[in-house]
Image 1 (spheres, helix red, strand yellow):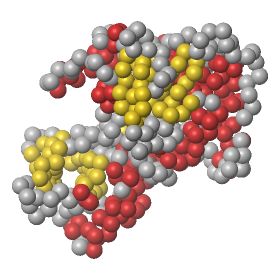
Image 2: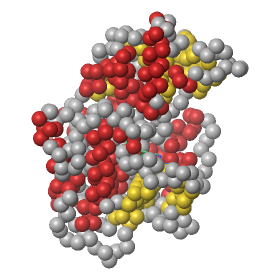
Image 3: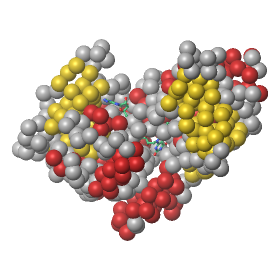
Length: 456
Ligand SMILES: Cc1cc2nc3c(=O)[nH]c(=O)nc-3n(C[C@H](O)[C@H](O)[C@H](O)COP(=O)(O)OP(=O)(O)OC[C@H]3O[C@@H](n4cnc5c(N)ncnc54)[C@H](O)[C@@H]3O)c2cc1C
């Protein structure tokens, strides 16, 4: 890679050490920005990434994650780790980000497998990258950024007695525990969190038919079992009474539907259980897109308006590119309501109870059930040591979390009590009150700016 030819990093000040939990796009964007700021002598930020599996693990389609790697991003490739290239650190930072870390530079780099990457991409119509190619891009960015990468799963975040530094405990793949000597000035948590799971209640003596029940994550890691289940049900002709049921109508559910349609289920009965009557479509609209980069206008909106915009564009919507694939499903219906419990009878039959929108509770009997009902974005709370217990009642817990989101600081760090007694903990996934795109791939460069700016 071309190194940034400007002032040398100021070595006088001791570095600010930021730990990022998760080696995904947010880690790549923060690590790249830190490298450019160091090279330009603008800030001395050292990034350490803790990654439980491999860089881009949720995108590569290799082990875990929410994809087979073959699906394409919904957002365009130009929304790379530097986008929107209007850095609060100045235009020379944008120039360096573009020349050293952009998607175009990655494709120009003649990395093995991408030798004619740029012309191939342009000739093919500059389509959004496949997830596995995006994972390769992330790996390249992180390599070039010279960030330290610790391939361990973080198990605890504890504050030092000075109240200003984090101590991190983690576990290696072989199960052995580590406590890292480095003390971090800030931690950034990333990732959508683990897939939510509906409660499974087996009858006495029943064996849960695990081979026919999947969630938004296991669906991808157990694709062979999905194919087997499809094959068995086709042979037994059990679909006429027992449809494939998908719970959820967001991006994950749509990606699963898209994969099923492309892998033999196009004409099979598929039911989607969701609190909305249809799959809504999201397109790339200039007016919507503008709000992702117009921080000033965003701040003029009420909290209710911000939430409405965020939900309209992120919840229960399917990008038009994915919609093109799923619309070939010939036997697809929606069941409008709330999925409640999965019951398993003694004979191994699955019944999903759904409280329909009209108040009637119905029982669906799926041949295969995929629970794609969402993720727990607050997953990291269980890592933070010494946090006061959250209220037991679900509604009170939700209220508390809403308040934390409203209190969030401009650096996307949790603020107010009890967070003011901890070193900064940045949680971009929860920052929709401050901007609609810091949690996704929409404005990774602006997200990185905000996190780093809080420490300069
Ligand atoms: C299938 C899918 C497609 C999406 N497509 C788009 C899109 O096209 N455009 C868009 O704007 N948004 C998209 N999103 C939404 C959103 O952008 C991403 O979920 C988000 O950007 C994820 O990036 P991340 O950097 O937060 O973390 P991720 O890429 O989700 O990475 C999290 C990483 O953390 C690691 N990890 C988890 N727990 C630990 C731990 N305790 N210790 C260490 N490591 C840990 C995991 O192994 C993983 O590698 C998509 C989401 C999904 C699920």
